[in-house]
Length: 65
Length: 257
Image (tube, rainbow over all chains, first blue to last red; front, side, top):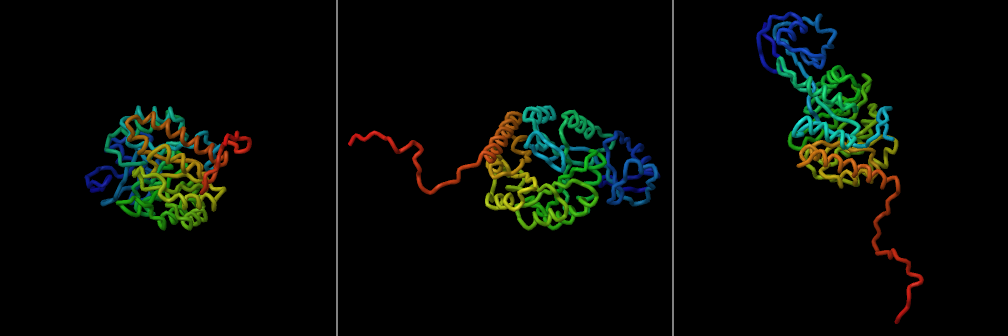
């Protein structure tokens, strides 16, 4: 399945957002996720089904002004 | 004491966390200046990355309030989604709402800003809008539910200092009950003192400290200027006069002619 992850198109096996994070070796409780422009809460990731062409953002804390 | 959305803050200096030579120097600057709030952002984390976690654990160790921003957002939707994501990650309702309308000046898109502020205030966010010095926009932001305003005094990172003191003074006069924080454009401690003397409640700055040759010492210098400006405002400043007025008593002067 092709997904756009943080702006890059790539293949993934995962069927849920939770699985995708493991597949990509993301870990830590500081990540925020969005699917097609909408926030997906941490607790909703296991139920969040992915579909071909979905756009996923995975963000984390960064310096800011 | 400064109160922002019901939180009492011991210092009127808010610092950004970007552009420091190192995280250690950032931490030193925050501690030495006793800044009360640090701004942070959300950015894409590379797969398997740990940078975000390291940064976040350092900020948490400083024990100060965190103000996440929506920096770089150009639309209402982007800013609203970023704010919701920041609330989840940083565990705070505070959001520095920033919607950029122009790439060159980084001027806020005040129309989008008001729309996004309305949405986020309804969702229970404590919105800190990065706005211009425009009085009517300020009114609209307050109507949208904002209880704090953060007008720029010059473009972000420009170090130019207050460009429009009359408008800042007007904002202060029109909204005596709303905490006003000058955000963006401060280059020197004297700039910070100048806006604090007008009665602004606090300042938020980043580049002028982070890009100083010695950021820690500069952060302390800003903290002193903020305090001096605040005390001067409370003490009541002498207004400028057109004519000289002798300070030494005239009566009783010896006559030798």
